[in-house]
Amino acid sequence: MNTFFINGKFALGAAGTLLSCGVQNVDAQSTKDERPNIILIMVDDLGFSDIGAYGASEIQTPHIDRLAQEGVRFRQFYNNAISAPTRASLITGQYQHKAGVGFFNVNLGLPAYQGFLNRESLTFAEVLRQAGYSTLMSGKWHVGDDKNQWPNQRGFDRFFGFIGGASSYYLPAAPDDDPVALVENNEPVTLAKGEYLTEVIADHALKFLDEQNGEQKPFFLYLAFNAPHWPLQARPDDIERYRGAYALGWDSLRNVRYRNSIEKGVTPPEQQIAARDASIPSWNRLTCDEQQFWQRRQEVFAAMIDRTDREIGRVLDKLKELKKDGNTLVVFISDNGAQGGDGLYGYTRRTTGPVGTAGSYELQNSNWSQTGNSPLRNYKGKPYEGGISSPFIAWFPEKLKAGSIVDGVGHIIDLAPTFYELAGAQYPENFGGTTVHPLAGKSLVPVLTGATDKVERNEPLFWERAGNKAVRSGKWKLVSLYPQNRYELYDIENDRGENRDVAAQHPDVVERLKNEYAQWAKKNDVVDFSLLAGSDPFSRPASDRTGRSK
Image: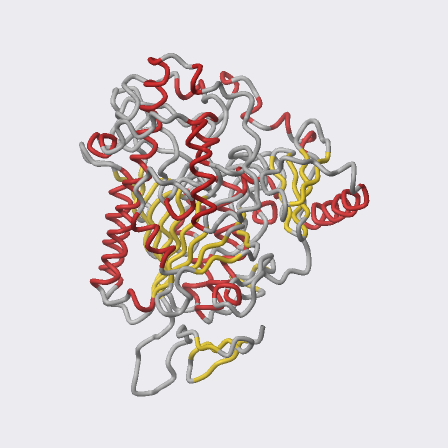
């Protein structure tokens, strides 16, 4: 698609439609910058169908659903399966290894696995600030623990939030619990008694928008909520809103979500739900007490999502108050699918109070997370669809066709080039004396505006994390899990639930994708994970670890 300028505004040549998001007005009598404001909202560990627009009927998400009803949804949008690698790709537009976070925010001894963003990979704050934007962030960072790697040192004018991968939502319930380690513009701050972190993250976003309002330039806000990531902690009145909502149980509800996702248009009716996870006990075989126990956990999880939605509503209200709602792009995504497994014992054993309270260090398990990721397979951390797929919603009033649902396969590496195109920002070859990595993704502007129905790529999409691999090329998806290293092949167009491994029927496709993966791995400095496994602090006994899983 050809993009050109008309009267200082972008025009989409292929579609012949005007997108009002121009570069700075060149009229000498006007100093107003008419480029769009951009808000990127990321939530944490949200399942594919955990919001109404993607299938949840029992969780109240009216504000997120409004963005979907008035904007564009993707059926297929991909992340990197787990927090830090996803954020590294999102923030830089690079595959995570190229950005320096090939495994996590821990250093495994190689540049591609150093655990923080390298200087060859520019953040969207660095690029957009150079282009004349105010750059704001509130929430979770997780791509560099040392102070010289923090947001204010990587292009953000204002920052509030936490640096690592997880945080309690309240002040600690016990004196020896970890504090809520927060930072505002490089200075340590703390929660006040009774404050809830999701609300405080939104409070600071609103404050930053008010402060920025007097500046004669557009803004970029990265709003990175930690909810609904563990620990399971929520406001009591929010939990009460969901009392009894989960008596149906996880077996039935995952099928309800599946049918809802078809009705919502995000799952084609011919697609089948993923096969049931055999490791999860049948709901009807649980005792009454067990059902009550598990219901309460999901009530808390739903309350955390509900509260996040209401805080997003406050941000949308602020846009309207500032009269900027007509010229602001809002994008909503999650960093990965819902949490699987049966708990992180080293963390959950510290629980000192009921689930939902400040003393709770509990987390989601596979049982409810299979429902959260319905109709997709598996969980956070794995390259199956339930791990690497998430909702994607883009809202830009009167610029995007309301209620659109597109099949174009998108990836988090595509957001940086999308923002740069809309902002008229030049992505440099050199920054601060350092040669910069070229962008790996493609702008989504043609797909968002309806100029095309897919992202035009010259190569497939690739994944690698902790030895788990995947390749997506057209309808084909190759998957290999570590340490088995056995290749599976799925026809995603006809089997997004990944129920039928057709590798044996298509050995030529398997070999082609394996070869393409090998070329990509070499280009992005990916190494055989068996060579790194011994240096992974999370693979060692808890008493020998230098860090804690996030």
